[in-house]
Length: 115
Image 1 (cartoon, helix red, strand yellow):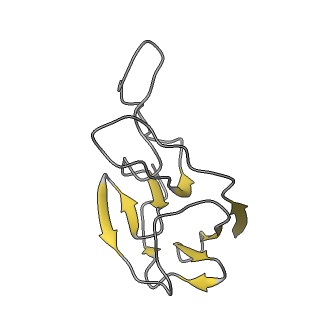
Image 2 (cartoon, rainbow, N blue to C red):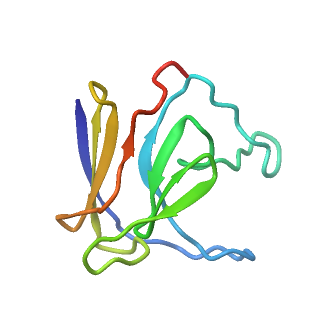
């Protein structure tokens, strides 16, 4: 079992067609292939953009570039001063999140551990 918490210092906007968002989560190195999203040596994948990573942005759980809406009290896109916790239990397996101490109503379960 693994657990961590992080505090968001700030989220700086990018000049892109899509709204800026930040994801927190867990990724496996097995099976990961960086996506060439920009210049030389630049990868465009974030946590939740492939089938070997699992992310949370405050409103959605992400895996395989698919966003699944979830509920939590006072839900919002992650921003400054938010505290996000992530709990990984490989015996189930499951990944769950909390935002500012409140549990997110949804989790990842029974995912592939082999990569």
